[in-house]
Image (cartoon, rainbow, N blue to C red; front, side, top):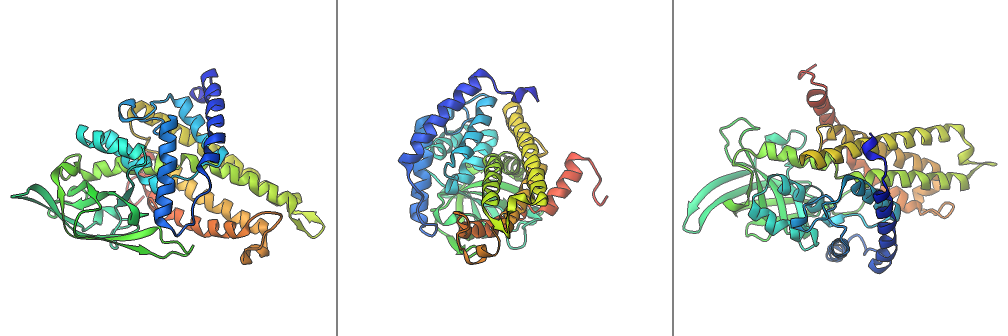
Length: 400
């Protein structure tokens, strides 16, 4: 663990990036309304480009693709200061910067990297994920979207037909990391391929889905004989399940690094509210049970951040996150729900109607509470994560 002790270089970088955030966030301004997708994309792209121009995009990406190639200590400081500053969430840039781009670094061809990585880092392109299907969610390897290899007068390409669901922000995406079945006769894990899908191709229809938090960030994608060039195959044909696990290890092991630090900031806000909100003649913070719960959650956030640090260090060492990313994702997804639930309980009954409590926007609290309900489902359900932990980390046999 001594590798995570800050050095003089880390401290200097912390001061540097803290000053940069102080200026950049004022220049960036507030985000647009949540239902204006064109404006949200433009805002996210503007912030991503601002990070790039400042030299803070792709902290661990190779310099030849525009990344900073920063040392591990600087990467960890970046995540901490990003959350402390309340910098904008990646939003529409999340899939591209957090797992599509890293997957291409690990598995893409030189041509794929040269074209896509700079466009991701500068905010030029938005990516979405085309993994889950109506009949293949938790059991992802049961996917049915079919890709037939065809070679005609236009050259070799895959002819793709199928239906994807839960594709976040697909309505503004330029590209999609797409899983398809290229060998229907093989075992379900063996006949899958990972494709780069250009979302402007003919035969693609995107349908947004309304969710409980009154947003439409999730989408369905319908594919009707879409012609995808063979050059867009990542990894070998029928080797997509291995590539997919690389993507998932980024998605579960490192993609939520900033979110983990944000949980610590949320706990600080919860404590501030509890010290101001009165329940009878005492503040909520005078409740020993509440202080015990907050203390336990703070300890868990610290432990989770340590595990995330280890996962980031593994990327630095090997190019991909550690296998225990499933443990990171599992505890993160459940802990963030616990914190949101406790925050709403501290705010009390007024939060039901969205009334301010001691200067706190409880309407935002309720929105966040509803939003975080998805975390134990998205990126692999908690049940799936427990199976992965049992089999791949603990080495237990299936059915044990």
